[in-house]
Amino acid sequence: MKRITNIVLTLAAAVCLAASCEKEDKAPALDPAIVGEWHLAETLVDGTELDGQLVDVYLVLNSDCTFEIYQKSGSQNDRYDLYTGTCSSIDGILTGTYSNGTPWGSSYKYKVVGSSLTLTSSDLLEEQIYDKESVPEDIKINPDTKSGTQTPIL
Image 1 (tube, rainbow, N blue to C red):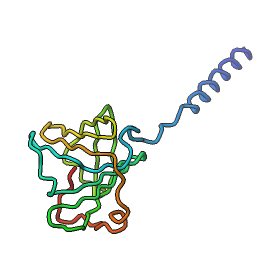
Image 2 (cartoon, rainbow, N blue to C red):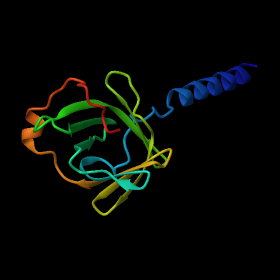
Image 3 (cartoon, one colour):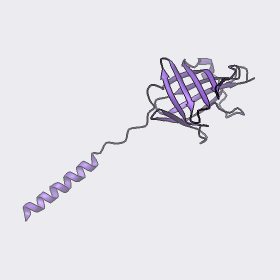
């Protein structure tokens, strides 16, 4: 009887030990292919290219699932608005939420070819093409960090 009790206790200890050794979930991370600094080269809406003078955008996607968007719109001269938040990439789909809790206007299917990143909105009406390019230091130093009256591009 003592031997059966020892076997049961040993099995119970093994089960507890195995349960406590489960791997912890890894911190979320973006697809390494899209991590980096990107500069908007072209925007197509419903197949029509938008005038490049309307907006200038730098998109920074960080491996820790945070993002920064430096955006200059219309007549803002050299003033860029800075938008920040968190994002995720799962199965080729990029989604994000701004720091104020507002989700991006869409989720985006992404594709990287060479040094170009293409984001296609879930409704397939908008396509943004970015080139791998660092954000100029003067833009990083002096962004207007308020939400502003401009609507972010994503």
